[in-house]
Length: 305
Image (cartoon, rainbow, N blue to C red; front, side, top):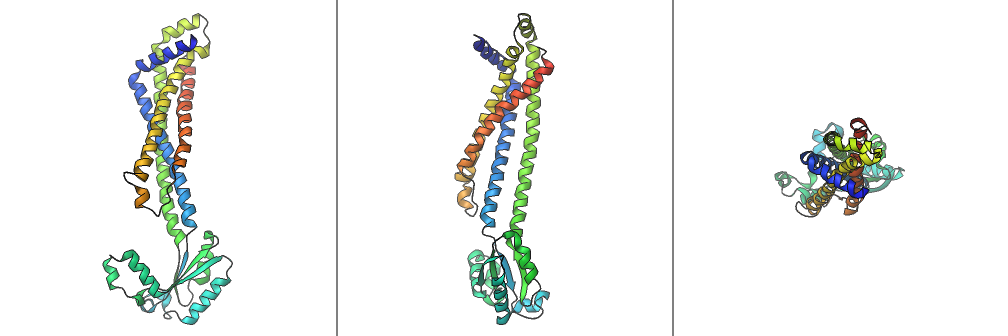
C-alpha cells in the first residue's frame, strides 16, 4: 500500500510540473552525454598516443647540394660518404637507439611522389633535390633530446626532427577540446542541479497541505520525502537514458556509418564499442544519484519534516 502511494505521488508530481520536469530531463541528458563524450575522448587520446608513440621516429636529414647553397647548417657542403658512415656508426653505438633505417634520395623521392603526386610542386622536383635521412626508432620516445644534442650542428647534418613534437601538438589540441567539453558539461550540470532544486521546491510548496497532514498523522520524514526524491530520480533516469542513446547513436553514425570516420581516417585507431558500453552504466548511475541527492538536500531546506 505504501509503495503504491509513493508511486502515485511520483506520477502526480511529474504531471504537475511537466515543463520543469522536461527541462530537467533535457539538461541532464545533455550534460551526461557531454560527460560520456569527454570520457570517450580521453580514451581516444590515450589509444592514439599508445598507437602513434610506438611508431614515432627521429629523423636526421642530411645535407644535399641544394642545401649547401642555401642552408647555413650545410655551409660546409653536401654530406660525404665518410660522414654518413660516421653518423651511422655513432647511432648504432647509442643505447637509446632501437633501429636505424637509411632512406636514400631516390627512396625519399619515391615516397614523396606516392604521398603528394597530385601536387604541382611534385612535377618540378628531381631525386637529387631530396634529402637523404636516417630514420631512428628510439627505445624510449622521450629520449629525443639525446639524439638532437649529439647530431645537431654536425658536419653533413641539415636538421634533426622529432615526430613526437608534431604529435604532441595534436594531442595538446585534442586535450584542450576535451577540457572545453568538460567545461560545457560542468555548466550544463549546474543548470540541471538548479532546475532539480527548483522543481523540488515548487513541488514541495504545491503539496504543503498534504505533507502537513502526513506530519500530523505521524508519517516518518523519509516517507514524506520519498516521493519528491523519487520524482527527481525518475526524471534523471530518463535523462540518463537519453544520454546513453545519444552516445550510442553518435558513435554509430560518426565512426561506423554515416560519416564513417573509421573508413575515411584509417590511420586513427578509434576506440571500440566496449569503451562505449562501459560508460553507459556510469552515466545511468550518475543520472539517478545526482538528482536524488540534489532533491534530498533541497528538501532539508524547503520541506521541514
